[in-house]
Amino acid sequence: MSTLDGRRDFATDTTLFRIIAIACVIAVLATVAAALLLDLIYFFTNLFFFQTFSLANHSPAQNTLGWKVIIVPAVGGLIVGLMARFGSDKIRGHGIPEAIEAILFSRSRVSSRVAVLKPLSSGIVIGSGGPFGAEGPIIMTGGAIGSLLAQFVKLTSAERKTLLVAGAAAGMTAVFGTPVAALLLAVELLLFEWRPRSMLPVAVACAVAAFLRGTFMGTGPLFPVDTAPVTLPALISCILAGLLCGVMARSLSMALYKVEEMFEHLHVHWMWWPAIGGLAVGLGGYLQPRALGVGYDVIGDLLHNHLAIGVVLAILIVKAIIWVVALGSGTSGGVLAPLLMLGAGLGVVLGPVLPGADSGLWPLVCMAATLSGVLGAPLTAIVFAFGLTHSANAFLPVMLASIVSYGFVVLTMPRSILTEKIARRGFHIYREYTVDPLERHCVREVMTRQVRTIQATDSVAQVLQDHFGPLQNHRAFPVVRDGILVGMLDREALLAGQANNVATIAELFGAHVPLVALPDETCRIVATRLAVHAVERLPVVQDAQSRRLIGLVARSDLIKPSLQLFDEEFHRERLRKGMFSTSSR
Image (cartoon, rainbow, N blue to C red; front, top):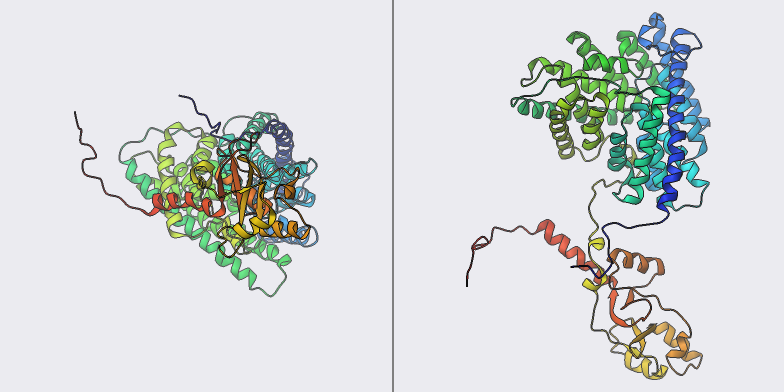
C-alpha cells in the first residue's frame, strides 16, 4: 500500500550539499586552530614556568619556581582580564555557555575578535597554570570560525547555526580524537534539534577533523586503558558510583554558583577578578603542583592507578577548589579536562571498596559519570569515555553509572553548570527534545470542512448585509467562483471596495493570487505561514493548481494537536478488561 500525501520522515533541502561543503572547509580550519591552541598552551607554559621559548610539552608541575609559582597564575589572569576589558568580554567563561548563547540569542553570530582572542587568552590562562582544558576554548574558537565563514555567505540563521556547531564539534574532535562524542555533544548541548539538515554537516565536519587530526596530533586514543570484564556484583557498584558522582557533580555546580556570587559582590571591576582567582590557583599549585594546567598526564596516571591514595586525595581536593575559584572568577578555560581529572580521582579513591571489577575500572567509570552529571549530557559522556580509552569492557558500567549520575542531577538541580550562567543573564533554556505536535498532524486532520462561502458574483452591498451585518459570526470568509477559491474577504476590504464604488466581489481581487493551505501540509508549516503573514485563518484548497476549496484552517484549529499531547501526558489508564481475550464466530 502506497501513501498518497507525499509526506516524508524528514524535511529535505537541496542547499544541504552546499552546507556540507562549507562544513568541510570549517573542519579543516578548526583542526588547524586546535593545533595552534595546543601550541599556544605549550608555549606559554614554557614561558611562564621555565622562562624558555619552546613548544615542547612540559608539565607546569615540573617547575622550580618555589613560592614564586603563586604569582604566575595571577599574572596570567591579569593579562586575560585586560584582554577581556579592552578586547571582548565574550572571551570570559569556559566556552560552551557562550556558544549556546550565541546560537539561541545572537542568531549564531560571533565576532572576529572572539575567534582571535579566545584561543590566545586560553593559551595564556592555561599556560600560566590555570586548571582548565583546551576543549572549551576550542569549542568557542571553532564555533567562531564557523560563524564567521557563514557570515561571508548568504545563509539563513539556521544554516549559520549548523556551521557554528560544525566548527565547535570539529575543534573538539581535533583535541580529543573523539568524533562520535563530539557529534553527540553537538546534539545534546548545541544544536537544540535532531534534523538531517544540521546533523549531517556536523557529522561530516567531525569525520574530516578526525582524519586530519593524525597529521597534527597523531592517532590512537588519548588515554588507552585495558579493563577486565565485569561481574554481576558490579551492577550495584555502578549504581553507587553513579550516585556519588552525581553528588560530586551537584556539589561542584553549587560551589561554582556560590563563588560566582562572591565575585559579583566584590567592589572591584570584573577585569581584576581573573587575577584574584589566579592567586588562589597559584596557592593551590604551590601546595600541589600536579593540580596546575591541563593535567592530561595526571588523568593518564589516575586511569592507570599510578598514584597513591593520599596523593590522589590531595590532587582531588586542590584541583576542585582552584578550578571552582578560577572558573567563578570569569577567566577563560574549559571544563572537560578538569572534570575528567576530578572524576577519575574519585574513582581511584572508591576503587578499593567497590566490588565486581578490578580497581582499575572505577576511575574510568567515575570520570564519565562525573562528566555526565555536570554537563547533563549522558550520551556524550558515555561515548567520550570509550573514545578516549577504547576500553570495550568498560562500556556497560560506564553507561549505567553515567545514567544514574545524570538522573540524580536532573532530579535535584533545576539547571546545569552550562545553563545556569546563561540563566543569570535573564535567558531560560529548555533542553528537552520532543516532536512538535504540530509536526505530527497535517491540515486535513484539524481543518473545518463545512465552510460558509461568498460567491464572487455577489454584489458588495448584498455581502455586507448578509455576511457582515449584526449576526456576523466570522471575521473573514472565502470567496469562490464555481468552487474555485478567489480569495479571503474581511470587513475592511469590503468597506474599502464600497467606498470605491466596486460593484461585485470579484472586482476586489482582480488577478490577486490568494494565500492558501494545502491539506497535506503540517500544522507547523501553516502556523508559521499565519504568523509570517499576520492572518488568523487560511482557506484549504485541494491543490495549488486547481485551487478548489475543501476547508478552512484557523489559529484555533491548530490548538487541537495539543489536546492529544495533553491526553498522552496526563491521562492515566488502567488495563481494560477483556483486552487480551479472544473471540470466535
